Length: 157
Image 1 (cartoon, one colour):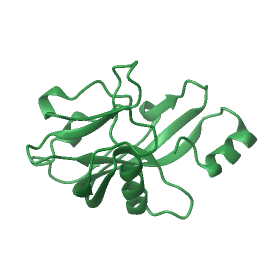
Image 2 (spheres, rainbow, N blue to C red):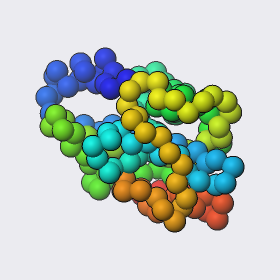
Image 3 (cartoon, rainbow, N blue to C red):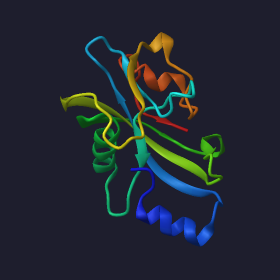
Image 4 (cartoon, rainbow, N blue to C red):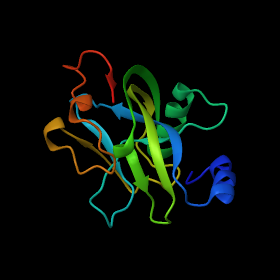
């Protein structure tokens, strides 16, 4: 879903001004330990984790389950909070001029079922990448957040 009714109403009131956007992102690994990324547009070399906004009344774990399904077709179980990221370097301006500053809760998720198939049209391509070949990302996630097996504790930024 491109933009929820809540964010549409908010944008009608404040226009394109920067808003704080509580969000979730998922790190999903296959059996080889590769990480699933999505490519929103085939016209760009920019990739992202399955991710999205937390909706009103929704818990972060409910949001990650919903977002992953919408963007990948997978049913996941959140396993661990890997990091809470935010601040000025997580500001983003969309092509329509809307500005956001993300506060992102990054979860390690286990793929429970489903077939990799984008549901909501936000993913044009879905692909697993090895840690050593992570693609160019829209959001500046710290590289160590992807080293889950060796990573001890939660990252706060």
